[in-house]
Image (tube, rainbow, N blue to C red):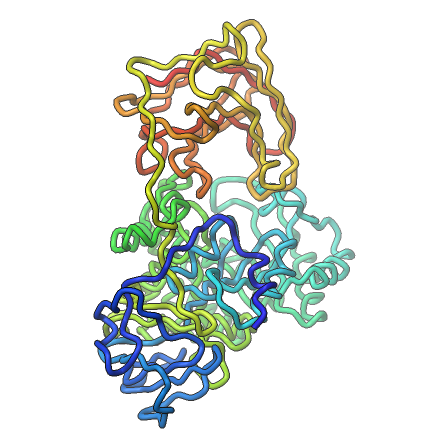
Length: 606
């Protein structure tokens, strides 16, 4: 098979190492829990997994054989007649299930690689840069070796000017008139959107007030979407808006609401309408300070976890005061009891969530909502694929793509065992699970004793490290700009954040090493201190540590008011494994988009 198209969209964010520590490939060798001999090749493309407990996407079966040929399932059943020379994996004591399908993702950076390493073989993206869609379609249409999950996506979302979705910096074609809805939907279909996502969100649940589409526009959008043969899913956060969307004909709701408990009658109404729900319990429980992803992380081998996964799980910037996610769980319980199709989805990479890892946490949360093991796993496999019309995935069935997950133990008795992964096959090829290439880490220089202070009296030269430079999202294809100047012994930072990248930023960065992004050890220092003044808006300090290019940096906000103010930020406030290892400190403007100007002076690490 030609893998040229497939490699064309492969992310540069994740380096993949050689596979290791897997099951014996032949039935005559030890069972899968035993280590394979060094250098032993894993079975790929054509092989069989024999005598395994099988979850086929709907139900469990014991002592089953699954025959894979050319990356697809050829046959399955008990005691298949297999060719004598066909490689075999002994599945005794293990469960084989379809590759997981995450029903709510926003693709960014290493999302697709991070997802695949934890058994998520397809992601259903609910809003991303439409420029990704053509390459994603070419990649998923091929049977080929890959280190990334398949991407299906709504592409651009439908929202009001200034509404939810416009804050991330991507160019969004907002809607102001229902008369334009049909043309808007046709444009999204031409871009390659697999379905249409519509935002019904005024921010009230989160204590904010933001513009949202009116009900007439939402109704026309849903009708126009159906006229184009596409599914319409609606972002909601309240029970009222959920019921309105169902009444308008929405095919699915993305997010379960946590403002009120649904009545049994309304739950039955959603079931009769055939509307599915993607609860995204991971992001909701994380918002209330209870991240199941962190618990999964504690069980994971460190070699499997990328810096981006660790960073996003540690980010508590959106944790809010409140009781807990009990209302959301009760709503899922009532919806499931009424017969509503539940689709597992995580809403990664929002704070407290991480691609792949949070999917396993989501399954545990669905179990907490009283779904049986088969229903939990179906929500993450067949129900997800069928709700969104994803072909040849979500089941282990004849002619389906061989996206497979082999785990130790009995998932029917304990669905939390999904994390005990033996191996993953994507398109019939085994997946390497290490998060980064092996090799010796570069030596980290040690900072000199005493405080490190920059007062700009001698100009922009910091007097320590490589110095100060402009930093903007232009390095990731964005359009934001910045300028630096020293006036009256202070650094003046000005510019404009613009649409063009998912997370726009612009400002100044201080490289503390001898070269840009060379890490320095500041052990013993506990605080970043600086003076600032400016236009009154909120800014952000980003801390880049070792391996900074592989992840989103931890961030802490500050305000630059009209008068000089001293800001002190404890280094431990930066959610990173070791905040004393610093390669760079960026002082930047992010949202809202527009012009900015602020000053810095007496920047100190002590």
